[in-house]
Amino acid sequence: MDRDQAQKQLELLERIAKALENNKPIKAKESTLSDKDYNDDIHNDYLNDLVQGMNQIEFLQFHSQMGFSFASGDATAMSDAIYELEYDECLGAIKQALIITDDEDYLNYAGDDEEAGLHYVAELLKEENTTQPKNDPYTYDSKLRERKNGIVNDSDYKIRKAAYCYEAALDSEFHTKKECILDYVTETFGSQGARYTDIIKFSYYLNEPNAPKYTNANRGHYSCAFNTRFGGHLITGGKDQFVKGINQDGKEKYFALSFVESVTDYFKYLDRK
Image 1 (cartoon, rainbow, N blue to C red):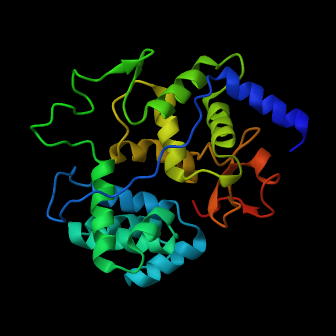
Image 2 (image 1 turned 60 degrees about the horizontal axis):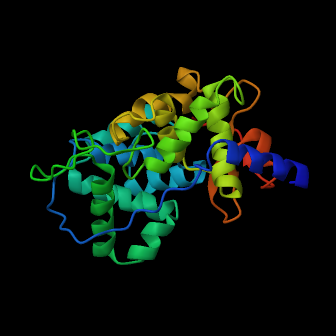
């Protein structure tokens, strides 16, 4: 990246309120696996999201290790199988998926410890879930939702603010929400690239910065932007789109096509999705 381009990106970043920062990784807390304060399908939703974000090699490895009898190319059968898993089965499958995808947070916490791995996954799902104990008044959609500068001030405040700033820049800096999303990923994640979840979560708040807390229940609608059966507008067509590339840490992540060649020597179009 030359100095002029770097300066231009810096100026743009300042104009959108310096709001584009990564969320902190989830850390496990003490709990028991018997805690079931979850939405009914949150564990299945989370696993489905992990599988959707896998590259071809990871996907085939997961299919093999799970011992599924259907063909590896049958996406519908895979989805059906994921949602048929019981709670404990799904926790184990999520753990396996995190190992296959070399999830750093999981590996740093659990390593080869089977029990610690299941504990981590259970806590991970708790963080994803919006359902709080009944004696806790601070639920995401309660009347006690605090606002800062007109934006809901919760653990997603930074990404909410970024979405608010990008939406305000529509028609001036950007012409479409797709352009906003592509630019957000480039400016926020740079050479590290973004996860599937990072992108659809921002897309959710770009639609409404003060919307109820993002959860797995919202994944389905926004994941259509990555599915060619429904147009897949974020990965096909237009002046720019998302592709997957190998980042500087050797991880396969999403990049804008216009940016990927400047930070990685390898990328591929997402033909599988």
